[in-house]
Image (cartoon, rainbow, N blue to C red; front, side, top):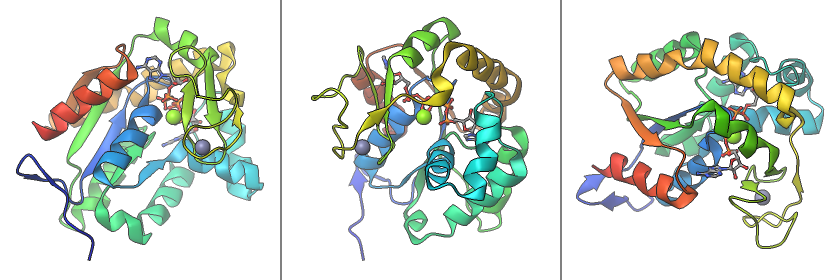
Length: 228
Ligand code: AP5
Ligand code: MG
Ligand code: ZN
């Protein structure tokens, strides 16, 4: 049996967190740190789609059609993938979800799947960054194909240029980080994903964090709201 993780007299075992925020808000950057600190898996639907694409699976090729346009992959495909991921043994310890749910039907499906097991998410953390900052962040992003780590040439540089600090993998520029696709992704976000802020607010799960601060300060604020 794994040791229980107890901090500040609060039991963080099996914590389930949803990361909300626009493309480029820093969901992935923060989710990686949350996963490490609380010893829970980081599950990014975007990373799973990209890994599938790299392997050339039918799911990856199908997802690419939507990702390259800045649209969302259909709920049916995404839900099938994530529900399958939840059956893996590491999810018994909780998880931090990054990029899922992204539509109201996805959020409802997650709530229902958990409720069927008399469970629920603990927090939905919204990393708030205004649109005008996003393009700048995306244009300097470098991602690791091996572990999904994300860096920025100016704001979060790696120790060695082009090499992932976390796993030594090679860094690349994502296909959907072209400015015209980023604009489309932002439109998609406002139309389909932003309503989740209201959804989780009504459910009493929402925690807001100012994502325009330094990476470390954003993380400290997230820890503060989780451990409050
Ligand atoms: P996905 O991979 O989830 O992309 P996204 O939501 O657009 O978010 P990003 O990964 O671009 O940004 P992020 O918030 O993780 O920011 P990051 O930490 O990298 O999805 C891609 C596509 O897959 C979607 O468009 C869709 O087609 C499909 N998809 C995925 N999930 C889906 C779902 N559930 N349903 C349907 N379709 C789905 O940070 C960005 C940059 O900023 C980095 O360079 C980073 O180093 C830097 N940075 C981070 N924090 C800071 C900071 N505090 N200050 C300065 N720079 C910072
Ligand atoms: Mg990401
Ligand atoms: Zn890596």
